[in-house]
Image (tube, one colour):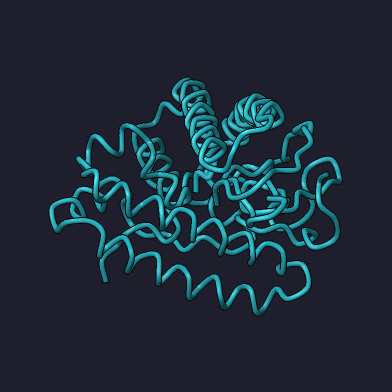
Amino acid sequence: MIRTASLALAFGLGGMMVGSLSLHAQTVQPVQPGSTQPGGSQPGGTTQPGGPGGIKGGTGGTTGTIRQTPWFADPAVRSQFKFSDDQFNQLNKAYGTAYQQYQQGINDLGNLNQDQRMQRLRDLQSSFNQNFSTNMDKIIADPDQRKRFNEMGLQYRGFDAFYDPSVQKRLNLTAEQRTKLDKLYQDWSNSMGDMQSKYGTDREGVSKKYNEWRTQYRDQINSLLTPEQRKTWQQMTGENFDFPPSTYFQSGSSSKSGG
């Protein structure tokens, strides 16, 4: 089986924009080393309903790939990098700073139509990734750690990764491929949002659907990319990692929306 990304989040990660948004800024609090925060409540005792990014659409689904809790805080994910506690704390702080800027942009979206919102959200996610990456360069000096972190970051981001200018440049995506990605991107957003809304009350069922979706995602990427592009994508994402559902979904998400 081709080792494409299992879900590849931003994500930031992580669904994108469909329909109107109901949003409130939240203060990011650091996740302590060894914490099992992902998959439970958000730092600070809050929960963020919606898609992987915690943004709930008002009419057409859920959106957003960037969760308040860092994707790399999950113990199984963190073990891939062998970060020291100091590295982890610095990364967590950098992530929180970038998230606050991202969330402010979300709150300032205003009365945009669906297409405008989708584009603006992609821009915000791109800015988040750039801001976080700039600080990450100063924290992760070991080339092996950085390489694996980059690989898994692309894997986690799902279809959002293909909107990254550096990814588009390396893959040399055609206009037709980008058009198809727009459709896959929206379907992905709706699927992730639907799973998020049900995760709190049907974790087993959602986990099963999530695993099925990962297989579908790989098939969709394989059918979209040319053999040469698939080879490049494999080089960019490295060994496939199966992110647990808890890195995308909040267990308390079904209770109440943010707005």
